[in-house]
Image (cartoon, rainbow, N blue to C red; front, side, top):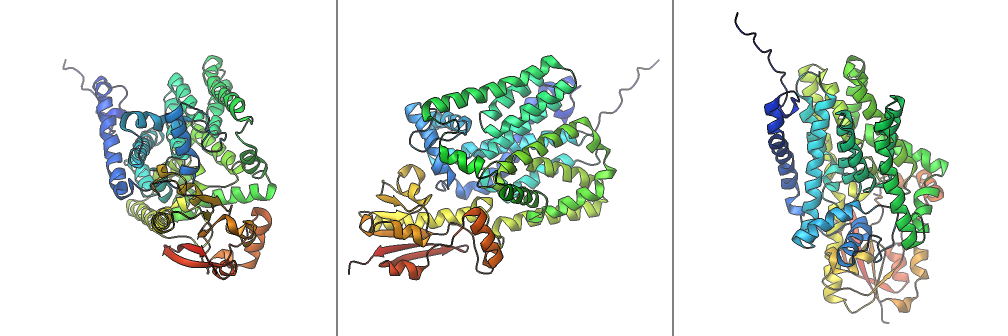
Length: 513
């Protein structure tokens, strides 16, 4: 009798065929190939920004903390105010600095390599979560991320949330594949990168307890122990469990105000399911969810538990209510949308995907009519370029004067490490640009005032509505900045001004007569 023919292998990428010995041998090759496939366009899209000076929280927290670790071996920052964030990102950067030296270029490339890993993990997780779907939906989520304005900016920035996304995806992928020990190790790395990541091992442990798998559930306890040890070290060095009382108040007590918490939940929901043309993906999910039995699998249920818990936690904590907190959830949304698109007619699915991608790209350059963090899109680059121009001007022409300005520009002028100046300038921090704040500064303490756009508020935007202004004033302590006429009343005359993308920065010099 002739030997029975082997049944045809499923139409999946070779590295996905776990039962194939040859694929196991070639797995590192395929992983490296797809990492290069996703990382190459990511690097190409950022080539013109690889030496962009640091922005906002980068030079306010993460870069000085990394430099403290690099130069003095201090795990708790001393050149900036310490806070609760664990030092995982800083430790990662220090490895690069040890190998290649500290520079903005090295920092940007290091973070982009991590972001490229995030694209690869999104692809691998999409393969796991889309098994049984028509076509090849796993390729779409990385493309959606590449086009996403938030991922575009955060992928090169030395901040927590993109690394937290990477480690959340890794932990989830390993747990779904039942590599529990590796998942537990990834959870420790996640918790030591961002403290709110502790919700992930908590869910994993709970799931295993419900399955009565006591032994494996114990694997996820060390994540909590690692976070506790960090808090003990932080308390011993800084004297506060969350690093400093201001951080604790702003990110916990302030954020838990019922009105602000409700508004934060609504804002998070709006951003994830509607903003930047994601409403198209939401409609796709609403129209196809019942047709997708895939979503009823245990792997999807676990993924949704992790995403929902992360969504709720970052909505309740964090006074700034930044959209970047949602980065660990964003790939899951795109994976779900891609599965939904596979259930549509081919032409309709292609049209929806193309429209969604176009909307994301447009929103990289288009600013909404309401206040938003500049780091959400290309407005971040406009912000940095304006500050770069002003810093070069004052260093060249007014470098001997004392300069009054608000953070983050005050920090930018105080150290050449951040890419704005070649030497430290004399700076007085005004706190903000409210008239009352500027009037509180003794005139003899500074000779130059530099004001810049801190809040996006176009003249025809929603912040011009009196009811919106009243709401922001009452619940967010918002007040308008001093006008140029009010600055001139304080004997400050404009010397130079730059505008870009609807933002502005102005240099005032004190009148001598």
